[in-house]
Image 1: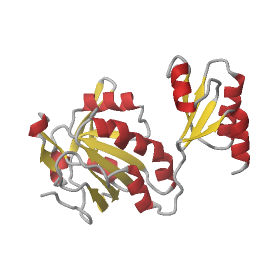
Image 2: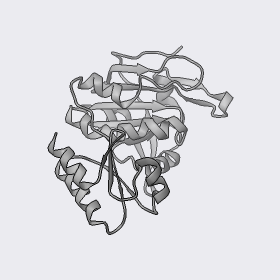
Image 3: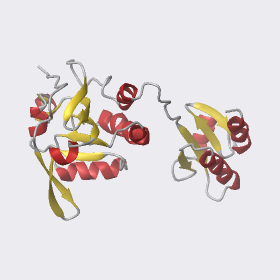
Length: 244
């Protein structure tokens, strides 16, 4: 039976972490004392939902969390420090602190240690998130006890909605470009000047012309997409931005 620890202090645990070539012990007091910390915990590093959705969205929304009073975002998993360090690098998730709960002590203390023997994982963490203030759990979002790996309430958007209900969500912007394209440079500068973060996909590195035709129904670049909607080239983008 999973336990909701709202209103209770987090367990006192020493995490064995590796920084460069040195071992470093990190205590829960160091992580939580005197701070507001958003924590999310998941079954394992490099697993599908954790890598495709859980970590990337917390990493993306980290500036908004900070703006609304969260000092740090922490990802905890029952994995060793080498795996967690490698996962953070693979995810490029440097807005998040990755903490290895290799022995499962913290997870067990939170009442979230579960058997994943059917997957060959052994003991792992149930998926959950929590907001911790000065070492005390203010709010927990625990995924329902259902078969598989439910993921519906421990996500970054749910946590942000709890912390700052009126906060506008950042838009998702992708720009298809090619090297040496002046119109691509113009589009990227327009987005930067307007305060929009974006992901850039470069021709023959990240995509082919076939992909561009399939996705954008176009052969020219740049092609800008915002929240799944095609805006178009740099002139189209300029008009779109002026309408905001």
